[in-house]
Length: 315
Length: 317
Image (tube, rainbow over all chains, first blue to last red; front, side, top):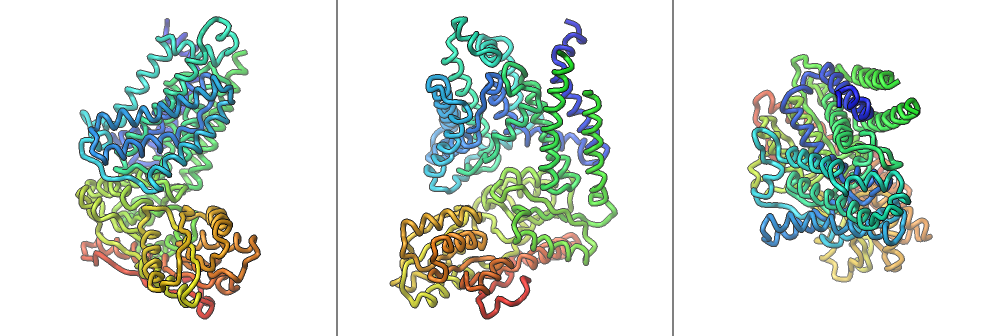
């Protein structure tokens, strides 16, 4: 495949990448503090948590679904893991339980949607409230804080200068890319989003795969919870509020269609970085948080407008 | 078409950034960054005003940033990291979380940027464990404020009756200290019972809902202490909706202009006044002193006072 045909096939994601580069260039011109290695690593580190959640969200949105519960599931996984750590459980066990707690919540979402036939919006809206309430009840509303250095290494550690959260993020995206492009699960994810009826008729166990996909989304929220807890040295029952919207925004800016069947995780990573660069750059420029919200909102609208215009042009 | 969008996007950003360009210009003056919990709360708006006034007077470049939501500790950490990247000379911070702020303080320490804390104390143990240090704390004695409110409550109820508390977010030092002071003062009166104590997340609408529920469960509540005026004002509306205006004693905390108005109108008995603009002013002044290489006090207390109908006429400062 020549580069030209590759670019033509993945035009939308390259558009997003061009957007990111233009954005970086603008920030570079406007502030001398933007284009330094330490700031770029800083942005990658800040983006990691939302990006990891958005990777899971991409799977779900590819099936034409949505997961509103990721922020609450993150909080729930975080407090469950933190309480184990505080009780002296080995770090490895606590981490596994944290991810499993997220995977469990996601699997329940998946069962409600695939077996229970609930619309994804409703099932995950319910889970959003249940998981939030669960984490508040579990902790009596108080944050759990103070962890060992070995646990905090997940946030503070660096390997050849690269912060651990960035390495985790890259691993997640590489794995997600591999699963989506090279495995049965990946092909079925696109197939379900493209035409669910046809996928069922061709004898694929859609219920199983849908449940698994929501489970993956929850599990990645659990993984994000680990990084967030290590970063703040505290697991808060109110953590992750509105993260679902950032994750959906990153996915949509990255070119994944809410109608399902179209998009990829590379775009999502770029989408998350666009949000990260905007937040970072706007703070460096001392633009108020109120104006920042307007700008980020406009970027989401422009990205989707662009998406629609491009599609119209192709037809 | 695609290019057009990208160009429009770029121009939009350039335009917005251009308007703000002068604020980050390095003209040799020291740059002090004030990071508050949120800017959609009059308390922090007042703090900002005090800081701006001091910055103008002292010729200091002042940047003011905050997360959209008061409880968003991670966003506050991002803002601080970004400010460290832009090499501010000093950071003046109102922590969104007493423990959660510690990693950000450590990062500032590593970058050699002095940190001054306003209003909400950092958890000492967590700070010591992480090896972080702050140059100074400037704030009111919240426990003393809670105690003043508690003593007034005992007096207003004649030493007997059922009382409710609207708490801040658990784990926030300010709310916890206010509640502690209030509980201490009230425990001196054995016939006063605290029948309900719940968080309303510092929010006005939550204050309304939570107190409405409390009234459903405990219809004989005669007194309410809210750890912030926003929650108190929400509760005042719930009391109005229940037709109980005037029969429940409400004491708030912060003394916003709207709460003072409520005190004047008899909707609230009192509110505890803090002086956030003074905190902002002292924060910037102390940062300026530090940057000149002078010593500052590690702990500065800002006055606190009870506002009742008698003295509610004064200005909000």
